[in-house]
Amino acid sequence: MTSPEATRHGPGRILILVYGVFALSATARAGVQIALQFAEAPIAYLLSAVAAVIYCAATFALAKATALSRRVATIAIAIELIGVLGIGAFSYAVPEDFPEATVWSHFGQGYGFVPLVLPILGLLWLRRTR
Image (cartoon, rainbow, N blue to C red; front, top):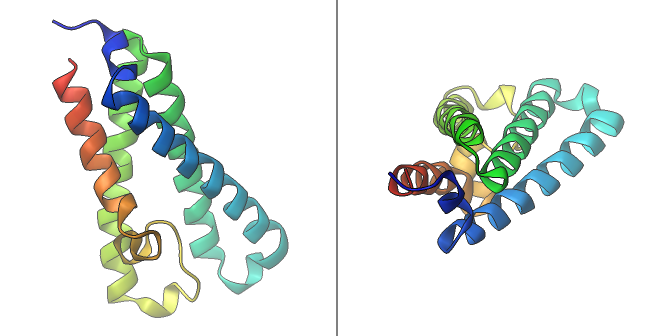
């Protein structure tokens, strides 16, 4: 068994960096949208806030790299993957509920599909470093 700290070495550093960028950008975007434009697309903006919380949890858990934080990271990233797949499909099925894009709408199309690929890479990395 590998040390829990393995998650923050090698390619794990890049993964933590990307999660950190998404945590920062999703938090800032959701904050501005909720503060200034909430009435325009409340579902989309609340989902952006949920995504921000999940990105923050994953970032801190991956960086902390303890046995407990690995479990937290696994749960957060699994929820993220379910969210991207669910919201991505829902945003195509009921586009009128998404007048404004979220990080996860259309499977992260507005972000180059990184939100779709990131949780897969995160879960694979956690599995590889277990």
